[in-house]
Image (cartoon, rainbow, N blue to C red):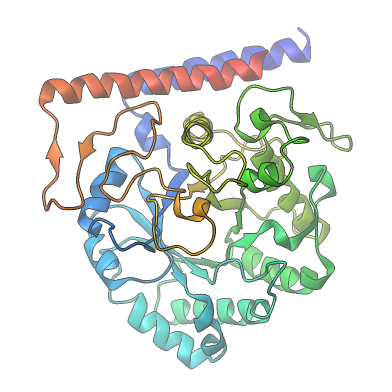
Length: 397
């Protein structure tokens, strides 16, 4: 038996195992690597109680917010939905003082746990960009002080501390094996990675293939960035094959960390998504592309995939975002990353029906009849089965 034949046979066995999980009803409990970002930069968003129902309709049990909104943290109590909170960038200078960090945790975290399942604290967001590097020096001291405060309060066993970086921290990213950090951030990244290794916490990145495609649509195949079937690319150094850009971006970060001596740091995706609308110059921003990107990404998550460099490690991904946010600054695309509109309706067809409906002006959630729910359940399971078959068959041939 050739190695290729053995690989195909292993993949077929994997397919049948996944189908058995679907029919046994256990697959939902096993899809634990998919979350979604819950932004609030809008003046017409539904209440947190309705948001919980929307998350359940997507079968998603993980979310992230960009602050520590008391109303959200209170509403999510006893919901069994895991939530990652964020310390706003402007707060970081204050957290250089360990006592201020302890006070922050005492007032923003401790009152809500354990009823609210806070599992992570993001210290800032994209503290290094090409345009601004003034805050990155505050990152590691703030992370260390927040972690020490959690230890002091006995909360470090439940809550990880990290900080999401944009891909601007990379000096090289292609091919993935050439991944390396920019010289101006290497020292800070070394300190961050040392902390993450010591605390067994992940390195989070914000990965947006959309930006790469928008800036260079003539050279980058649209199918490669949308997770569609395509010829992909092979890393000439590792011979690893990549059929989508996001996995290549994740592995580039892993290789960059390895070059600094940290080969076992888990890389997770804090944000990825695709806008359903954009300005005239924002090539590729459309409902069809947004639906394709997020649907294909969900298929990969349902199939439990890892990246080519870490194929046996399921990749944790948080989709951006739950809602379109009409008050976000910047181009039109920034306001249109949501899977949902503010009234709770889907912004585009993801290929399956949600199990609940809600409106921004209603205080109740209206559920479908039993017959309709049964039909939608059948649609959902059919979607899962076809999704996993498609992913595995693409691996076979």
